[in-house]
Amino acid sequence: MIRALIVDDEYYAVKGLQSGVDWIAAGVDEVYEAYHAEMARELLSRQEIEVMICDIEMPEGSGLELMAWVQEQGLAIETVVLTCHSEFAYAQKALQLGGSDYLLKPVIYEELEEVLRKTIRKVEERRKRDETGELYHKYAELWKVRKPILLERFWQDLFDGDIRLTGDNLAIALRDFDVSADELGHAAFVLLSVEEWLKPLSEREEEIMEFALRKAAEEVLLEGRAGSVFRDRRGNAFVAVHAGGGLGNVDRLVQDCRTYIAACRDYFFCKMSCYVSEAVPIERARQTYLTLLGAEYRNVSRTSEAILVTGRQETADQADVWGTGMLLDAADLIERRDKDSVLRALDAKLEEDRGSALTPEALAAYYHALLQAVYYALQRKGFSAHLLYGGKTLTGPEAATRSVARLRQWASEVLDAAYALLSGGESESPAVRQVKAYIASHLDRDLTREELAAHVYLNPAYLSRLFRKETGMVLTDYLLHEKMRLASDMLVGTERTISEIADSLGYGNFSYFARLFRKVYGMSPHDYRKAVRGA
Image (cartoon, rainbow, N blue to C red; front, side, top):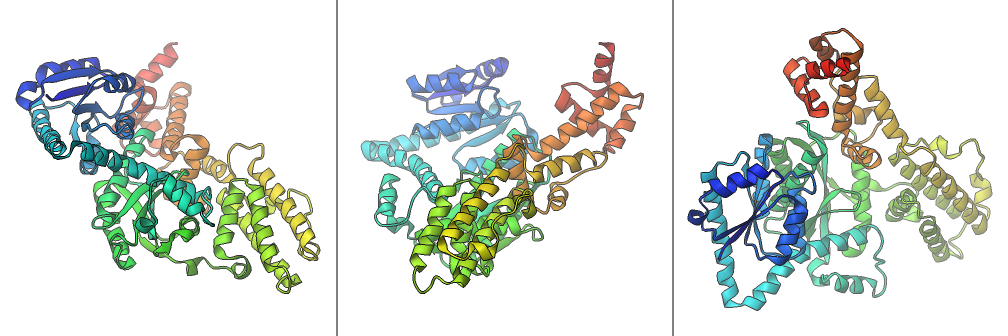
């Protein structure tokens, strides 16, 4: 018995598939329907389904979200993905890597029937395996689905400092996440940094492409290697390659990253850089994570490269006493406004050096190290260092380094000043405000993400994530809406021709301008002018 479920918010599309496909010839015995993701989840909770035919874009939850839910539930369902966006044909291979197939709408029934026959063969092969050891394979499949989720949560907690790598804490965390120390041991990490999309994408389209990029990284960078592809809680994509699972020489991993970067440009139309670490023990994973983020943030000149990042590249004068890892850790905690953890780290270092090592020179080194961490955290948000003082006079280095007590008092003062700046009345960072102002004054020409990033001296990938986090919009979406808002004002308030308006906004192609305007306002520029003026 093979049961199929069609999930699509378009009623007639569902009915067309029901009547147009020769289900019996394709090998399907029963066909069910759902018109949105919630309806599909309800049906899947009570009805066994072997094959799901699912539209990607639905107003009440995307097809990808539904597929993720199916995975989380451990349901053994083969999925055929449908979409009406022909420009995403290049995503077909990436989605297939996840065990799904991909078809463009409108669906050609014969093609769907052939895909169904191939998909049903996968179902039948799985059933045969189940016959030889049903209970074993049931739990093996559940583990296969569950393990990547557990690994992602493990790395997220480790990167955020929620797992303290002291005493038995690591062993307990590994046990809680069902991960063995032998399996991890040492690992190399790759930060996947999208620098620029070479085609205009909406927010939903960008999410789909980011999903495809992660699947492609899994195929290229983990071929013959043990590891996982995951996202941290900031939204950055990472690859963890286990040193005990076929990592080999890290130079080979760097070369594979170059292959991946070329594939991203050819198949996914984006410029990508990979920041690669050396293999490190798990105790140094968080430090390595912060080092990779720092390398990406500082990189404003190299693009489309595989960059090997070592601890030596991140050293600073103050690191001699504080330690590079602790500097990056402190900056991360400051950015997260965790004052208590910063002060505890400072107290621990002071206690460690208490005695002969604690000299005025040593206290001065701690002073400048913490100040450097504060400046770094502020700069990542686009704040200039002089804003820290806000017209106030903080304790200077001479007074702050006369005793441990005064150093700690100064540390508390400077952290309070930094947090007041980071959580001030403005909801947006200076970098985002500067980008918005630059866009507003340059709507007459084509703007790239690289140009905007250069204006605020930030890495393009970092700026994109910062802009999206603070505004809730993809940078390119914001730029498009600002241009079309100005176009709508000119359509209503001036007598300029539509071609003149398009040209004034940097669109030499009238048809392209009209298509973008319709995308934002749902009608052509001509109809918009007529409708608004007629009102």
